[in-house]
Length: 73
Ligand code: SF4
Image (cartoon, rainbow, N blue to C red; front, top):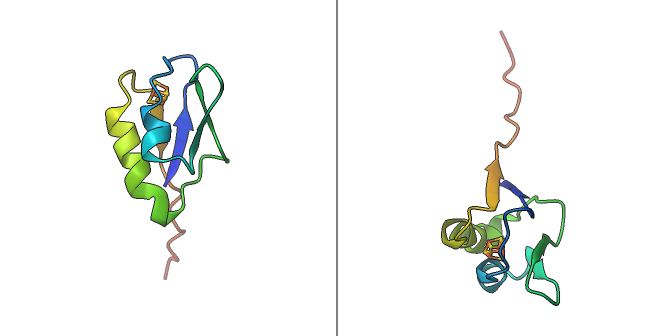
């Protein structure tokens, strides 16, 4: 799972960091940034999905994961 954050939408509610503190970090004003590249470890996906659903301004987006190439026969 890979996510993207639109910081221009973030209103600093802090819900995302409450659900997935390993993925989202808050600055001193409560605005969020991604702790890493946006790649979410499988064990962190549940919290990130809750953050995605609870973000009141829909600032968290999922990006399509690259699909493995299918070998032709
Ligand atoms: S839940 Fe949404 S609005 Fe709140 S801090 Fe996270 S990204 Fe920003």
